[in-house]
Length: 280
Image 1 (cartoon, rainbow, N blue to C red):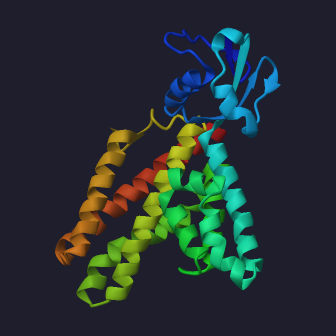
Image 2 (cartoon, helix red, strand yellow; image 1 turned 90 degrees about the vertical axis):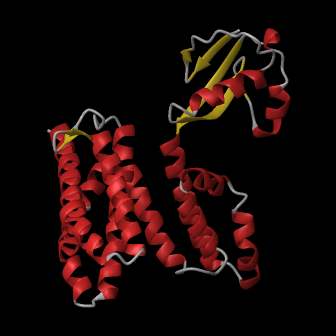
Image 3 (cartoon, rainbow, N blue to C red; image 1 turned 180 degrees about the horizontal axis):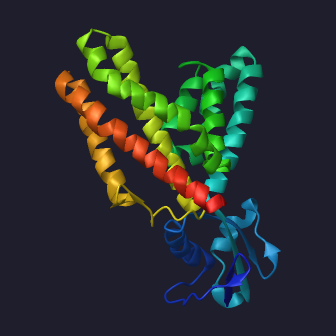
């Protein structure tokens, strides 16, 4: 039997596999490390539908000449799920009261919900609260989904768009010790929350850039390989958050001003420079 993946002959040596289901189970485990997911299949030129997939799983490979398998990048599937979730938000807003009361449970069974649960648990939780009539409401959730969609569709532009936000939050980090000393607790708390959110966004965009083929892994930040730099950055971030939870104002101030602000500036500048060089 010949196996093709996205139209290309696959060098797959069958060993104990007896039927199509055996092959797909082995292939699914392999695909998870490639950033792709199984999205379609045909047997001897005949497409396998959702209704017939269980029957196809049991088909003996000795009776098949060609098995065509089609895959799709996870990020593309995730982007499609976000687009569908945007449509769900519109549907929820226009639904009658009784429909809204059932909306969340029905939505949780949808393909987009399952994709969000796997790839972005925080978005899944936010969606669940929104469609249950809780949280900040549909409009706030729509803004968040639109932002995540921009990150996937044009990560380079989104990284550029974060420049002013990074600059602002770093300035506020440098002012954090004074805010704490002068009793501006609300402003200090907002600074820590904003910094954490901006940092997570930069990390997300970096991962998308890597998937899009940008040579992220080969770059250095402050003469340190980016993987090691991000690891140290994450360690310092967790230390900052822990110190803030423990009300260790001295450590919070020192970490914010002398560790986190310069690290975030350097990381953003390095990635922005990589994007500029790639686009030239």
